[in-house]
Image (cartoon, rainbow over all chains, first blue to last red; front, top):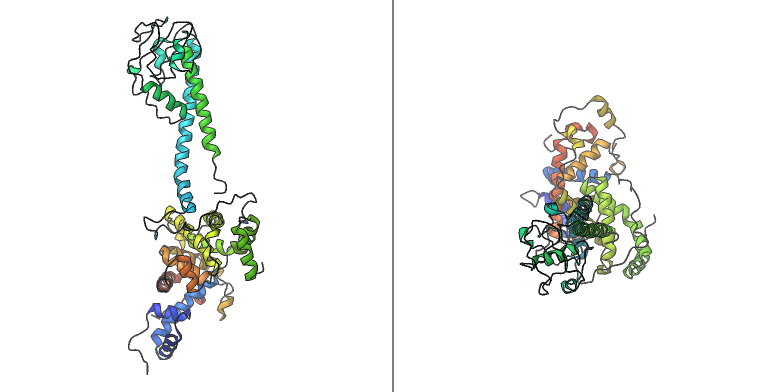
Length: 278
Length: 212
């Protein structure tokens, strides 16, 4: 006579199959199974499933997974957690380096890609500026074509109208021999100054142009249509450093070269950071 | 490859914890088949399994100092591997592979030539020597991929990799009770899946049906 009025659950049968029960229970179930056909069949079904699973062949190794000999050892500290399944991790669980790396790789892939794209754009921008500077020619002065590109808003303090761009403190430029200082107020394109490029040089230029409000300007020898107030010298207070006069070819060329360099550097910088071992 | 003696393995682990890559690589050679196997069975994709396996070994090397002696190193490795596989699965959210849709969708009798191919060396009574046909293997793999991740992991670790309940608990960071429950539910669910498609299997592979 069976000791059980009801049948064994699949969980019990499963554990019985794996001999994962304490001896007592194992024996009890044993006894029940002897007399209960329904449970016997259920057990047989479970057993067959397990047999099928165990019969699955091992897939052939596609290659060796040994780590490269020059792998850098960057150990997790004891306190940090192993990579844990996200599903079970509490929100406050500190993320292990490996898990963070996995996420970071996914995320920084996008971040890196974004930076690469931006660097590329900056580089292209720079090249375009240089190109527009060339046909314009030096004597031309650029004129209305100064804002061909979206990088308007930059003003340059060139020692002479045609002198190469000078990246120096504003005070210095004031001391240049020629008094032909050309400064164009950036009010005409204030938001164009907000370039989306996040490169360092762009930041520099941005902060330069952003802080320029109403710079005292010096009339340029070139007949351009900008609002230029004739002044002989550049006022020291403007802390801005880099000004490129886009109305003039050299200004554009200079800015273009600068951007091209920055873009190229950005491209290389964001490409080199391949995750090798980590 | 000969199974490493326990002492040897402990030696290698200790050296790995000091940063010796070549020592760790000997462990990799020892466990890579197991890792790849488990990850493949979890994901059903050979390429993804290779990627995840490689990542898992890198992660394991980095985390090697967190391994405490005395617990199963195999379970410790598979914990990393299965976690990363599950993460990958959740990221990708793949549907069951299309390769089997033709087989399972309509439940029609298969073409004769395929059926005869199924009747290869059958399990003439000795389960240990059972050779599964390609189609049956794929069917089981599909069944695995239908399982919820936690049940799938438990079943793969226990029934395919042969881990004990304790090791499975260690690898999944859960209790024995949870392990037991997940394994049983996974098995039942897999069994139901196979039964639903067993018309496609040759008679000697068919599961005994309690409804028969």
